[in-house]
Length: 247
Image (tube, rainbow, N blue to C red; front, side):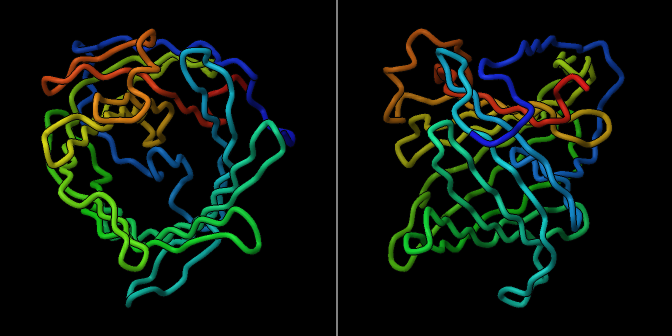
């Protein structure tokens, strides 16, 4: 794997509920689980750590290249360069529309090599960038490539459901937590994700839990769990950006 700042085993991250803290609103300034700030020229590296071993599985280098026009919108063009320990690489190209305090995903191009790739159009509800404690909403995300579509019938539920102190190698900070819960057409749980956003608007920690409807749920039997929406979710992996590491 090319040079990067991340250790091969996940560094210690501690999340402590802080219901006593005065933090109730945060204006997010980045792409959330993508971590890169929403401004031309911004760049962020971030890492995936898979459970149960908590080992580094890949690093992503995200850059905002500029503005491109797509479907009548001026979009931020984001390149995600994924690098794996075995030396394999892949590149995703994302088009995002930032309009006021909303962020909308428009298109993703996945490319594994010069000859293998696909372009998928995204029909998704916009994400609010201003997170307010106690606020919740529902949305959708349908991704299509020609006649093939995924995500139809699934409902995405979001909630800003708490203030937490998140301790990472760079230090401790107060954060709001945004929880995303995805249910399929039968109501079975697919994915639950937690995003922790600090007072300065930067996302500093993200983790994903898989539900019983997900293909590797049984393989995660020994990982940490969270009960939510009547479903037991099992931790699959966590992500941290370079800003969360010790300077």
